[in-house]
Length: 323
Ligand code: UT7
Image (tube, protein in one colour):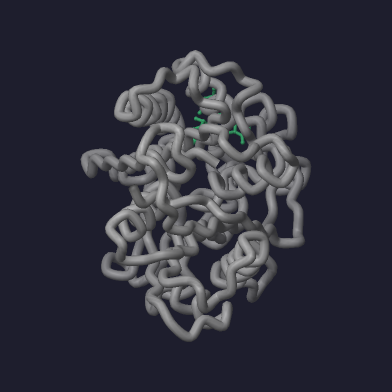
């Protein structure tokens, strides 16, 4: 059967690094609290004038190089983002142009912190159905632009960044030993919009608004729904959770990552985490972690990866792929 195989990854982080200690000058907080409660040590912040499409283009370019694929070999660009350059057009269309692509299609997906799982699910459908041969999937965010920098309960948690994967249609035997995406499942429940949102938007206030989060409640949902999403996928594949070589969850908080691993009885040394260095980069966090894990040699060809996420909506889901 046709599978969406991961050919290469790329990543881009803005140059400016903001340390936890930098917040001590602005807010009543400290490095120790942030590290103990979140595992976050620092984050990257986009420069003035540096846009989500700029971050996405850099990450996309590197993914194409690593995949040894030219821009014109790509049929579809999907950018998962909640922080687009503009209300329209889609950031993906700007990325398509900046990459020098003269063909194909491009659109954005907005599922907040679950954005990359949603985008991979859509990309997988395009590939399995035969509608696209190669898809560039990018997660790119500039959350620094929608943070309330006076709210210590949220602004310390997020960072900017982008990362990308190139997917290619390849014929595989059709078993759980195949390479590529083996499962992709997404969920949402709109009764929880009030737990994580922006204080405005195009139609409601004609502004982008600032991020609001009921952290404790979101935490609780994350440690229940992310393991469930992995279990759903592993059940569909007829495999036990112990078959997972690497758990690569959305990177919101180290305590959430450890909680998810614990529930799945996956040991913490099988969790790939970049939260210390990047903080929560929303839709960019899973591909940033995949890129880090593959470039440093931890993730090897043939290994099984489970990538769950939960974000505003609520939205949640998981994709499972063999590298
Ligand atoms: O990507 C999906 C979206 N995001 C997430 O998944 C994040 C989910 N939530 C979390 O990660 C955690 O709930 C937080 C990191 C946001 C908060 O951690 P917590 O352990 O749930 O702390 P808390 O909200 O119970 O706050 C404990 C105390 C409070 O003080 P009091 O009421 O006990 O006096 C807070 O006011 O810590 C205080 N606090 C801070 N202190 C120093 C909250 N933020 C800070 C801060 N520095 N930055």
